[in-house]
Length: 488
Image (cartoon, rainbow, N blue to C red):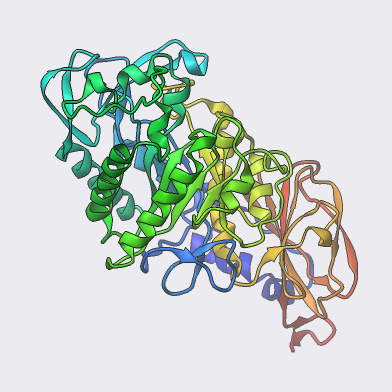
């Protein structure tokens, strides 16, 4: 017998009816990688922190939304060893994201006109463009191209910014727009020579290197009011370009230095204040400050969301989110390029939103479509599949309910348990007074098996049908009573 995807979902979600009709344990195989199971959901207003479960964002309907996806460096500005740089195929990138059913990207900016990847232990020198400010001269910058006019914006940059956010919206993808980038200025060799705020690179006599050390890190502090005013003018123009779009989030800066803390706080407040009088208000995020930043500074910030560093276990054993901030855990801030599929599931089960820094086509860094990262890419899509299956209004981390320590639950009603190494494990169902439908999910293959009814009322030992492989077990209360052979 052949089943359509709708039929498979019906049976997979109604295991009690299957058991009623057969009187025995039924195993139903569902390979979600071959079926279009992700429901297409239209945007309903900009995201805001969910009132019922503040670990997540929600849209205007109040529906909690988990954000998960792969991002890559050249998805806004072109970067390659050529001059001019090769054009990034954004449409192909969106198609690729869609094949994994991801719903979120960071849209990267890059402040420098070049990127020397010796700072990343590689050996490429990339040219980067476009930039927010116009390059019309007069005069020649240090890279041999016209100087920047910091009083005039580059229409190509902002029209591209809008069109790429709109294209992502058409694929139901949320976009975090990165406003500044701090890692490159700190660690790319010769970075200050390729920054627009270097006095030799602009016609406006702006010199961001106040202490003359040749690094210019002061541009990401509040030390120079003239620089800060230019930055706020740019941020305002970004907001004016995107405010009517609903799939937007903002990120102040990627991995800026710890002295940028008060500057980032100020830009966050500036965005909140400016958008307060606009039709839409969008979430603003602050990410790990490298090198030496503290997660405490992220939690203390006025940001709506944060991306932490490894301190506290976010890499190996993520701490449960408590709702103070929406947390987007990002492999970029935990490994650079790294992570594994188990980390994706652990993060999800602890109330976080997992993101992956993907080398993608390998042009900027890493290897082209490296198969090593395929399990992570797939896991992000699987997580989103389950996020739409469960009620995130009420499901919160309860690690003490299972011997694996990874569980989202509405205690007594619904449980989603992750077991990294499969085998036998326990689930405390003491608070569940009736029967629960069970479904097993192989986190490597995407195979789902509908299993037996499970009686609540005590701690239960469960044996994985997948052996020692990582798995997810979903348990949900049902009105089916085997004693009465009927619905209660």
